[in-house]
Amino acid sequence: MVNYWLMKSEPHVYPFEMLVSDGSTHWDGVRNYQARNMMRDDMKLGDFVLFYHSNFKPPHVVGVARVSREGYPDHTAQDSSSNYFDPKATPDNPRWMMVDIEAVVELPHIVPLDDVRNNPVCEDMLLVRKGQRLSVQPVEESHFDEVLRMGGLSRQQLSEY
Image (cartoon, rainbow, N blue to C red; front, side, top):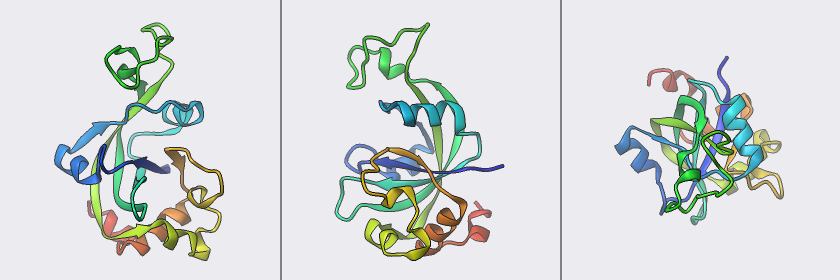
């Protein structure tokens, strides 16, 4: 069974276009225990991801990615030269996890946060809940499908990629 996720990235740090160019990447630097647990325990090979550009005007969903490697230790936590270094992370207790994702398709139209917020189908989506700031979050299938539709893509078209 496929699960659905939303992952946030700031476009000046790692835009969707770079994921398309790279083909795939590891999703490192997550330092929230709830997000870590989802990447470690819940994200599975083949799960779909809405790629979201945060800290941008307007913030928006720009594309779809897929989990290409399940959770494994985030090596940046043990790299003292990394911005994501954690002195408590060790090889025996890595503390932080990451997954790999691969680009699937850029949406024909970006889906701005305000459009998601104003869509009654998405009123219960975690992304639009007050105080919800997780950079990795689950997405209900109905919300995933609606965001795809808003972006000009159907589930049928997605299955062609």
